[in-house]
Amino acid sequence: MVELLQNLIDGLGRGSIYALLALGVAVVFGVMHLLNFAHGEMITVSGYVAFWALEAGWSWFLTVPLIILAAVLTSLVIERVAFSRVRGADEFTLLLTSFGVHFVVFAIFLLYVSASVKTFRRPGWVTDTYAVGPLRIEVFDTVVIAVTVLTLIGTTIFLQRTTFGLSLRAAAADFDAARLMGIRSDSVIRGAFALSGLLAGIASVFWLMRAGSTVPSAGINPMLKGVLAALIGGLGSLRGAVLGGFALGMAEVLLRSRLPDSVASLTEGVVFLLIALLFIFRPQGLVSVDHAERV
Amino acid sequence: MLEVSGLTTAYGEISALRDANLRVGSGEVVGLIGPNGAGKTTLLNTVAGLLAPRAGSVSLDGEDVTGWDPEALVRAGLALVPEHRRIFTDLTVEENLKVGGITLPAADRTALLEEMADLFPVLRAKWATAAGYLSGGEAQQLAIGRALMARPRLLMMDEPSLGLAPILVDVVFELVETLQAQGRTLLVVEQNATRMLEVADRAYVLRSGEVVAEGPGAELRADERLFDLFVGN
Image (cartoon, rainbow over all chains, first blue to last red; front, side, top):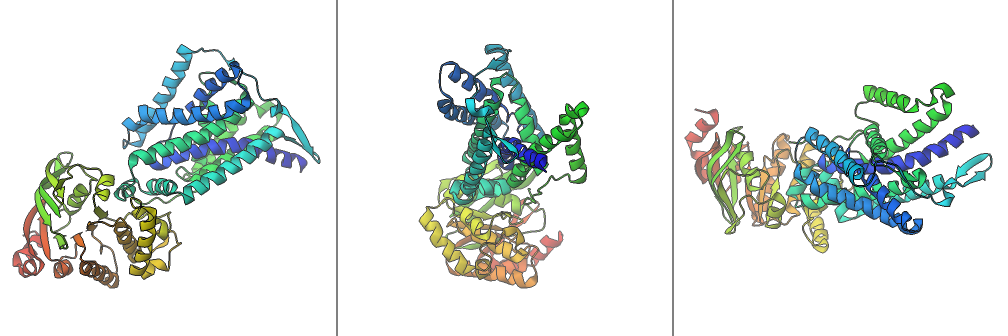
C-alpha cells in the first residue's frame, strides 16, 4: 500500500512533464494536423542556452525564464523557417518535414558546438526529499506537480476565456470554416506554436534541472514521450494529451518498480508493448474526438 | 454589390466552373440553381476565397477582391454559410456565434449575440450546449446565425435546406424571407429550385459549370426549358 502510494506520487511527477510535452504536441496537431517530431528541439536548444547561462555564472533563478524564452523562440523560428512552407500539405509531408527539422537542429549543435555531453550544475534542492508518514517525497516532484497543475489551469482559462483561445479551438475544430469567420491562419498557427513552445519551455526547465546535462540529441527522448503521450490520449484531444502524459508516467514508474530486477531494464520495451496493445483495442486513443467533417 | 465576371475554377485538369458571369445588387435576393455537379458550390467557394480562380474576376462594391483570402473577404463584408454547415461541433452554440463575430469589436459582438438569440429562439434555448448535439435544423440555423454575426453586406448560403425535414425546410425559407424583408443582400445556392424561385428576386441557372439561364424568379419558373435543364435534356 505504502509502495503503491509512493509509486503514485513518483508517477505523477514524471507524468506531469510528459503531460506538458504532450499538450504542446496536441495544440499544434489540432490546428495544423502536424505530428511534430521536432517537438524535442525546444529542449535541445534551451538546454544549450541553459548550459551557456549557467557557465557564465547566471543563477538558476535567472536561467529559468531564459530557458522558457528560448523554447518559445525556437518554436516560432521552426514554424517560420520550416512548417510555414508546407502548410496545407498532406500529413505525411508534414511528418517528414518535422523529422528534417530534428536532424538539422541536431547537426547544427553537433557541427558548431560539440558532440560531447555538456554538464551544468543542478539546483541544490533537486535531490532533497521530505517525509510524509512512511512516504519519502521529492521536493522536485512536489514543485513539478504544482507548477504543472497551475500551468494546466492557466492554459484552460486561456483557451476558454480569451478571444485568441476561442480562435484556436475553432481552428482546431474546422480550419477552413474558421478562416471563413475571419480567423487569420497566420496568427492562429503562430499562436499555437508559441503556446506549444511555452509548454515545452516549462517542461524543459524541469527536464534540464533533473538531467543536469545536454547533448545534440537531447531532444529525442522528451519528443518521444510527448508524441507517445499525445497518441495514447488520442491525437487532437487536449484533455486526452494530458491524460496520456500522466498515464505514460505512471506506467513507467509502476513497471520499473514492479518488474523483476532481471527485466527492469526493459521497462521502455514493455511500455511500447502496452501502447501497441492499447492501439489494437482502442486505435483512437483514450479520448476520442469526433471532428467536423473535413472537405 | 457583387460582380463576378468570366470566373473559371478548376480542380487539376477538370474545370468545375467556366466563364461564369453573375451580379448581385444591393438588397437583392439572388438564387443559384442547377443540377448536382453544376458548379454552384465551386462558384460560392471561389467567391468566398476558399478556392483560387484560374481566370476571371470578383469585385465587391467596385473593389477588385479576386484571389483574396477568406479571412480578408469577411472583413470586406462577405460571409458564407458553407456546404454541410461546418459548425464547430465541440464549441457551444454561444461560442460558435462569437467566432462568427470575431472580426468585430467586443461590444458589437455582445449586441449581435442578443440579436441572434432573438432571431433564433431555438438557439437561445441551447445557448450553452455543444453544437455537435444540435439537430440538423438547429445546426443550420446556427450556421446562418454564425455568418450573420460578421455583419456581412453580402450573405452567401450553400444549400441551406439540404437534408432537412420538410417542416424545417419551411423554417429556412421563412428565414430567407425575413432576411429579405430586413433589406439584406443574399446569394443562395439551392437544390430546391421551385421554392428558391418563389422567393428570389432574380436567379441564375448553372449547368456543367456554365451559366445557362438568368432572370427574375417568376420568369424562370414559367420557363419550360428550366425543367429540361434539370432532367438534362
